[in-house]
Length: 350
Image (cartoon, rainbow, N blue to C red; front, top):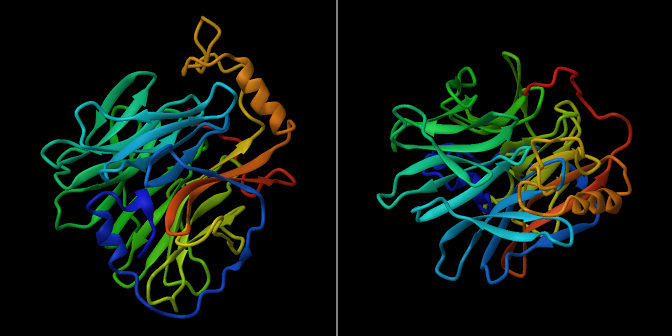
């Protein structure tokens, strides 16, 4: 499968992706035609946007001229822009998800080539390793203090998903699957991801203890990467008739609606993260310190500017990666949402 970006950086992701086979013709509804902004880290050969929070902060990864991956944080506003994230001593870093309070999760490789997860809270890094996972641990999504991702017990075994609450792990396995990976989580605790059944790759939504399969109709493979609090879901799919396995992004307002294609600047493409809101909660005291700045050192009024730029309206913000003239860029796409959303729960976890 081509163009899956940071979602396949871990060695065990190949165990899921290798089972995608040719099948019927794909029939996702037409491409989503809304304006988008390309994100291109200065001097990078590749940039991918992986996660976004309700205040518009974006995390992702970029490759430098030597082909080494670094994480990044991108902030809106006149004092915003790109900031590099490198786990101390790591040879490779990917920033994958960001919570509304600014906590960031991702993964890194150490000098021995071993893969570990991490959380960045302010300036403090914490390593996240699933017990006994010699094949690697890779957190991909975060909401509040809860993170989700995948782990592999060895390089030769399939992966399993996990939920980490900051202290303990819970394994996530789709019944009957050969590999499972959890990629995104929202405030009510719904989780999206992908699983392999030995023949194809399918997306899934986990709500409580109930799994719902997410498949783009007729696609050879589907993976769900992000979920917003009202229930919007993004991910990628591969057209079954495409022998190259080139990926396309998709968006659906809920797990029941036929997905719409999002390719932004071109394929291969992937829709990796989604957030909905008006630009931040100005009463979120965990986000700002006593000096009147946010946790990244920017003046508070920048967030007000971001809110005003959005016109105070609720939007669906989607981030991902796309390809133009042979180069991979991150993108930010803004979609006005009508109504209250697709599958909203009132039970917000923390």
